[in-house]
Amino acid sequence: MDSAEEEAQLGLDSDENSELSDDELQEAFAKGLLKPGMNVLVDKSKTFVNNVEGLKQCLADFRKDLPWVERLDLTNLPVQDVLSKVEGKVPNGEVNADNDFQREMFFYRQAQATVLDALPLLNKHGIATKRPDDYFAEMAKSDQQMQKIRKKLISKQMILDKSEKAKKLREQRKFGKKVQVEVIQKRQKEKKAMMTAVKKYQKGMTDKLDFLEGDQKGKDSSQGNKKVANKKGPNAKRKYKDQKFGFGGKKSGKKWNTKESFNDVSSFRAKVAHAKGGQGGKKGKGGKQNKRPGKSVRKKMKSRS
Image 1 (cartoon, rainbow, N blue to C red):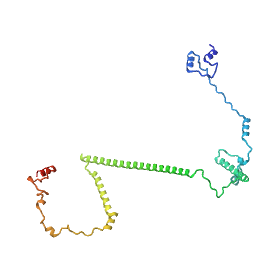
Image 2 (image 1 turned 30 degrees about the horizontal axis):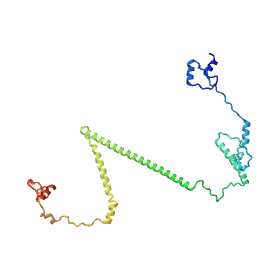
Image 3 (image 1 turned 90 degrees about the vertical axis):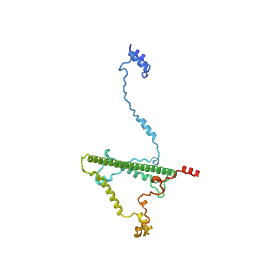
Image 4 (image 1 turned 135 degrees about the vertical axis):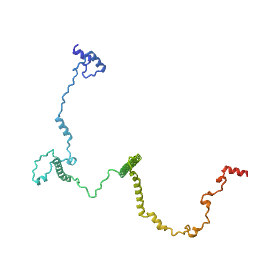
């Protein structure tokens, strides 16, 4: 079978770009009609079209014979570099594109030359170049819109403040929790050290009682703090009450002992003093106090009577 017959079977003679289905390709591959190297992609070189006449025609269509006031275009060279002239340097007119400072200064001097050339032309055509003294600019947005913007900015600021406060509170809580954990760990450590020292002392491994000095030191420090507080004197509240109500004055002395009251033993009761008579109520047999009957029993007793 020649190549023409193979192309006819594959359908390549009608259209080179026709796409075959998967079933057709599998069938052709099974028959041995597909061979490596039959389909090779060839990169075609891209041709660039430089239509100079067409570009010039487009440029001519863009150009319109308008007055300068409508165009406001200026093309000029930069002004003379005064600094170089004063320093005695003669500029050669070339700008180094890699030198940022030199390049920016060139742009600056060119803009300066444009302003010097444009101001006389603007004055000639009656275009004002200075803002009048009584000029008031009109806002592009209304007062209502600006109020809305202001409210929105305030709400955003309030949200930011709330988030900052919440962040600070979280940090404070974390710090407080950290301090609490440290205190608990310190107490556990001290307790463990105390228990270890007690066990050593019980087993006879040591005869020192230094572990008991910790509590004594704590008590001494608390007592020392109380003494310092007492040395400071009464607080402001106590001083105010003393100033307002006084110290109460001299007491009447009714409960004070005298010589006569000390020698008077008429009210002495031996049974009460030596706990022989009991405290109140009558006693029945066996020295036990008579208990009051319950409420139901008392009601029955009343009903019987």
